[in-house]
Amino acid sequence: MEKVNIGQKLSLFSEHWNPKIVGELNGQQVKLVKLKGEFVWHKHDEEDELFYVISGVLKMEYRDKIVVINENEFLIVPRGVEHKPVADEEVAVMLFEPTTTLNTGNTYNDLTKHTLEKI
Amino acid sequence: MEKVNIGQKLSLFSEHWNPKIVGELNGQQVKLVKLKGEFVWHKHDEEDELFYVISGVLKMEYRDKIVVINENEFLIVPRGVEHKPVADEEVAVMLFEPTTTLNTGNTYNDLTKHTLEKI
Image (cartoon, rainbow over all chains, first blue to last red; front, top):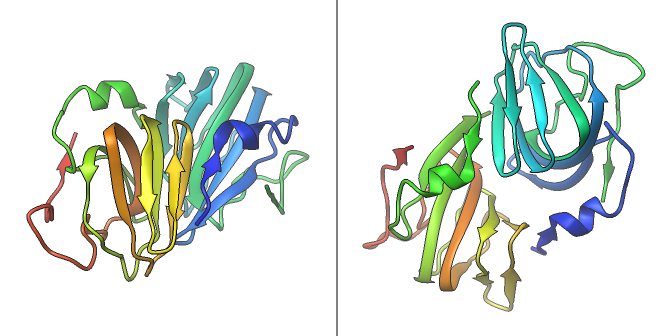
């Protein structure tokens, strides 16, 4: 019932590739994450994933193309589709996805976050 | 698999209180809507509703308080909670809610939109 200010929430953390939960509704979560560098190739078998760029430029690599997402643009990555986020410079992203979504999808590595912080 | 540019989508329509579908994922829809004036009191028995303010200032009236939502802020209205959006000046809002959500919730009137356009 309280509003969420995106800029204020983004000021609370600085690390990359560690999504923070800022809202929950209908079995979905709203997350904020800062990205820099290259993530890993992965897919989500059961979850579609929305990336909304708050600031910066996000490149989403698919196996056959790259989509460049600028501020105030979003991309929905359908379930089952392999993708790799790449951020040449720091990007702030808002994610909408089911509560079941693991950040590295079907892969497990040092970037995998099994629990996320609510801020 | 294609990105969505919020500003470009907003340029495609001018009417108020008529949400447009701009994305679908996990049984949810992403909608854009322009608001001006007062809406009607209503609630959604089964759906939580997220209002993300793209531009302008949105006032969300609850029965016991008002929340003022500015640009780059969002509010989640939980299912079952009566609310009334008010926009003194035009506001552009992104909505995130289940596909089953009717704009006027448990009420039916001239503002009710039974079908929404995809843009």
